[in-house]
Amino acid sequence: MESAWSSRGTSLGSSDPQLQRFMEAEVQKQRVQLLIHHMTELCWEKCMDKPGPRLDGRAELCLVNCVERFIDTSQFILNRLEQTQKARPLFSERLSD
Image (tube, rainbow, N blue to C red; front, side, top):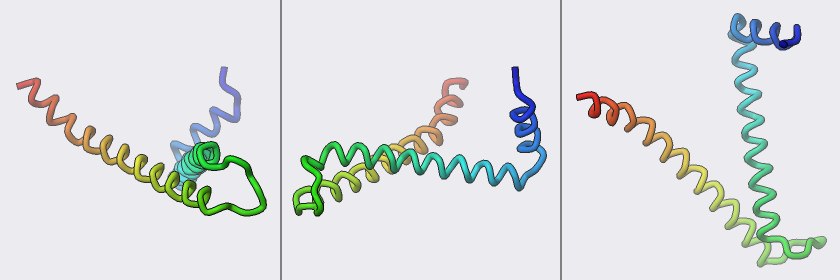
């Protein structure tokens, strides 16, 4: 059973392009924040042995490398998914021939 708010929000989103763009931007912001949170948690666990008032050189280098690898991996996965999506229609067309 839907509440009045959720049904109203759905109809507004579909009829108001400005609201729709706003909602899409907010969803995108949330995704970025979740990605940053995940990266921070992962790299913190991997690199921080004992937190102190300052980062030692080893921890700093580890954090930099961890973040760079995380970004590289994320970019690789996105590119790979994009290639797969582009290739999929060609593959399905070949199967139907």
